[in-house]
Length: 295
Image 1 (cartoon, rainbow, N blue to C red):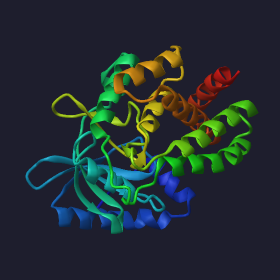
Image 2: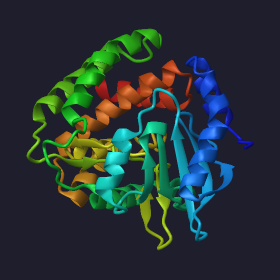
Image 3: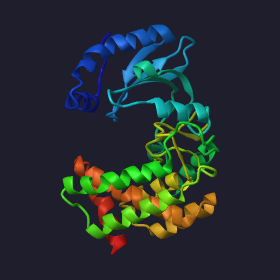
Image 4: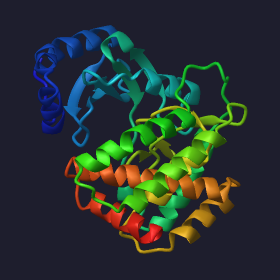
């Protein structure tokens, strides 16, 4: 089988020393196609951590086959998709985690390409997030918002140094303070299933005109963890981020301080990471806003 592997996926795999995976991939896809009765189509571009391919089921239904690259465990994503059961996220049609493979409902264009007005996109993201959020059994094996905040706090200082100190020390300190407060605020009794990376490119149009999310990190956390990503979105928009945060709080009933603090966390971590991998101007825009807000 001949596969069109996007350049970014190929580069990621080779850079990680896993070129063997590229050699084995055609046989993996071929075996999955036989077992799930799939007709294989074209690959999607844009990602780097998985091969994502258009497929059709035996009855002609369009779907998507996703295969994670080595080191990318899709287990938590699969758990989140199973829990959502097609409500707020793409429906999970099949899984084979021994081969890091998921079979998913195929959706349409990203919200970013369909809805021109950023404020409208933010409102729509709130709506789809609310559909996804649901109480969870505390014993369920999902990472928590507290663990995410703790991991960010551990990694941020080192990443900041490696990226050449792209923002002020005060901005890093502010983010670390927010991480500590959100870690302490975590409560398994009120935590819900959250997406973990809620933005306009991860929300795709469904057949009924609504939107569903793809690529969930799948966390057990406070809802503000998701809404903070909306505060981070569109760094060049120029609107008042405090007003944006208050609007999100008003629409969802989520605590405004928690949303603001998660927005700070996502802005600084996302900005420093983007600078470390050369993803510009996004990283510089995020950190310029973070420095301004800290000052």
